[in-house]
Length: 262
Image (cartoon, rainbow, N blue to C red; front, side, top):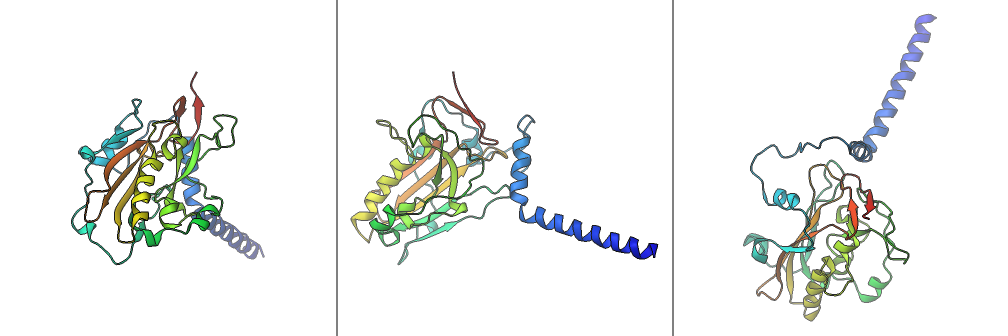
């Protein structure tokens, strides 16, 4: 009888452990993000890059904001290869898988007017519900739009109509995403330039790439690397890095918390 009871207890414990492992597996990204957030006081070690030679992304990640939101990369010259600039009968977009921390990675596209959603759909697009890594609901003022973070699309909604897709949205500041101040530049500045060109003709194509740049295991990107080149001409041509900052605020990129500077 005792052996039978022990066997039943062992089976219950085993089932409980299996259930816990299943829950942990399906919530692994959230759990990892929480662990990273809890480690804000610990020194950060970059476990992904063990080489002393820094690539372009490492160099961009190491840059510190010095008052200029947008800086050029490679003298503003895109670095697409000949193969990457091949034309197509139709446009396309390709999103990378989320990394082990659930962070969006590089997004590529060959943009064309045919991919763009109709104006009526653009006005009626659904509310964003994706919870991006590091996102915090932090107010910066009293207006309805005064939030520190926007959920920023890598490939803009106006280009392909893709909206609530976790692979395509990051936690980006208002200053990064759509800075409305006079003469300010942000992602929307370059998106508007590309969109205007595409709308001119269905024969216009733009090779487009947007990549969030992270420093080590931080959940919020330090900035976004945007690159575009129109096919067959230089009407659209840029290679820029935009800092994910907000003037007057100090951001903890590890977990998304922020405080207003005095």
